[in-house]
Length: 71
Image 1 (tube, one colour):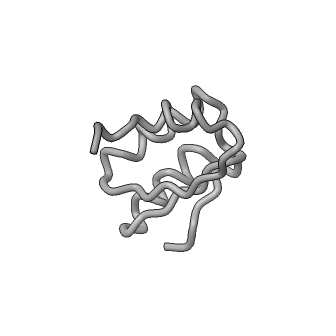
Image 2 (cartoon, helix red, strand yellow):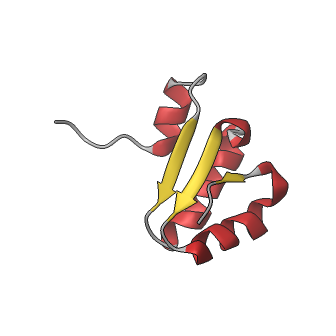
Image 3 (cartoon, helix red, strand yellow):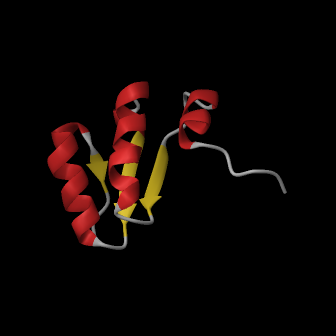
């Protein structure tokens, strides 16, 4: 096994792929949203999280352009 690829690298290498990304910590919210913004990947990514507070935070920050799963 090799190193885990960065989200930005995966989204760049696979521009036609739609992905569901599971947020694993509160610290991941802003970093993930920054990558989606930089790559304009909003239409092809859905965020999920175990902790509903992380999804609420992401929704508030990104607005209606962000797809999220149910908490």
